[in-house]
Amino acid sequence: MSFLEQALEAIRRTKPRNVVFFTGAGVSAESGIPTFRGAGGLWRNFRAEDLATPAAFARDPELVLEWYEWRRGLIRAAEPNAAHQAIARMADAVVVTQNVDGLHARAGSRNVIELHGNIFRERPSGAHMRPDVVWFGEMPYGMDDIFAALREADLFVSIGTSGAVYPAAGFVQAAAANGARTLELNLVPSEGTRWFHEARHGRAGELVPGWVDELLA
Ligand code: BV8
Image (cartoon, rainbow, N blue to C red; front, side, top):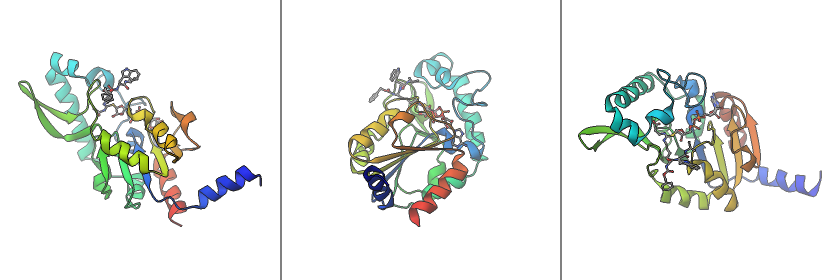
């Protein structure tokens, strides 16, 4: 075994102290919630980018509110899956999620940062109440806490995200710049897969429990 391989092996064997999970729609796919960019991610032939914007809401608030109500119905009928439950077994980990479905908290994760908000919260917007989620062009939530976690992280694990949306898609680079090891667990290589030290591809419901077992062994 080369010196580099020995070093990597040694790093793998050291138990990480500060784990940051970063999740996207793919972690909830096996709970029956459609992802944004995969098959079934459309609603009445609209793309999320067409509806998750202040302009779409200003233009047709009823249409946007109907889309969110349709998604709430899917989420109410959904249960956290084996990936959410495995993540929750790492009680001290920080979970930074792009998802608005609340499934990490329902699975028992305690340190969850919902950087794109939560579909079951509402806030006023002009004459209408609107979902308290972050639309395109709006400031994501919890950025200070997220970057504090990325500074402390010694392991950054990205699960079920296409790496298509910023600033979230840049978190892996911030983690790596702070010395964290980075791992992608995704169905297919994401748009940012080149930023990861290691990548494993498959369904989160199978990959994540096995990986957590390995880590906690
Ligand atoms: C901001 C919440 C300024 C609402 C969402 C050009 C360059 C860089 C940036 C920009 C640019 N032009 C515009 C921007 C900014 C823009 C952006 O990034 N646009 C993109 C399209 C280019 N970003 C913004 O506007 C953000 N705000 O920039 O404000 C600012 C910035 C910094 C500081 C201050 C101010 C706000 C973006 C938030 C938008 N809101 N959602 C809602 O849910 O309704 S976005 C939505 O899509 C998600 O929240 C998520 O963030 C994003 C990506 O979705 P994913 O979760 O990754 O899902 P996706 O379907 O794409 O992928 C699923 C993955 O899972 C796939 O890889 C698939 O293979 C995998 N998978 C599927 N099944 C499984 C699986 N993996 C494992 N197991 C399975 N079973």
